[in-house]
Amino acid sequence: QVQLVESGGGLVQAGGSLRLSCAASGRIFSSHTMGWFRQAPGKEREFVAAISWSGARTDYLDSVKGRFTISRDNAKNTEYLQMNSLKPEDTAVYYCAAVGTPTIFTIDVRRYSYWGQGTQVTASS
Image (tube, rainbow, N blue to C red):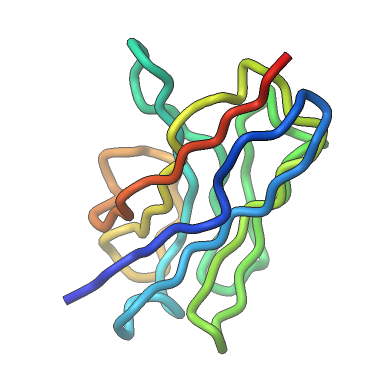
């Protein structure tokens, strides 16, 4: 059974920073692409960032490039999302997720089979 547990969300003023963590159980972590997605009220879930199993490849939503950084520590079975210069439009529930197939790199939400419970991020203006 694969479990993903996010932490680190909260309330910050616009321009502030937060670091999200996602702790994974099971052998899936070190061989699977991991990602972060977010969903704001009344909107569809959207891709935010992804990192390949080795950490060598990353991809980001255009609006977060230069502000957010995704990383992973396979020895600790943990991925991270460092969020700087937060804007009110970044407010959403953030989910970590893992691609269902080993080694494949994708940002397609349909390919992500494992999901955390979500953590709220609020950037106030």
